[in-house]
Length: 220
Image (cartoon, rainbow, N blue to C red; front, side, top):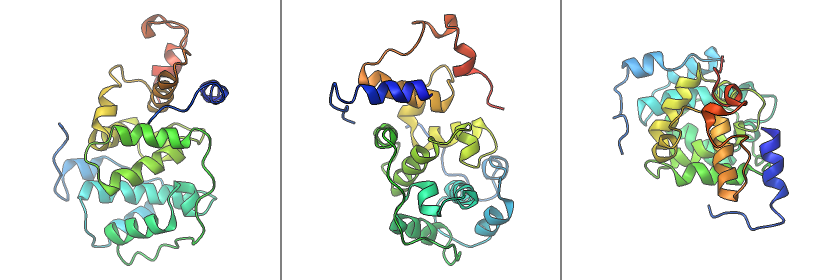
């Protein structure tokens, strides 16, 4: 992953950065999707948030409860951990968990990493609905992609399949391009490298590549 990042950054001085529905229907509260999809890494906070009556789709409420819980468990301020401006965080919390009492820092998130704007642009170019929720998710996904663990872990989700459900639901065109079930973080960076015209793969055929297990292996 560091090799992909350094290759992309090395080409920035050579060329300008690139320019940047069939989805599951909303599930009723208590449905199998909302009951089984997530297992909180910070159970007390996620469960507390879900106990608060709020607006929005039940799937998204559960999703953001766990993303907020993961951000709150980070050593950084919540805005920095999730990459969201304080105004966006307040809007998110007020919409889904009004009166939750979360401490929203007044300071903006830390500066973007070099690849963060491109990750956001990649996600937003493939969003399904054009909603504010997808803008928040693109920002959170880009920021948490910078962390060292599997992306689903750093988002506070139960498994890779939870992340796949999120992406298929909210970033359908992008998710459909991952036809071989590549690890999502690897897939994002491969997409960015292809936009920049960088060839990083050892083989033109994934099945014949010596790095196959690194890109497609289990994310336990």
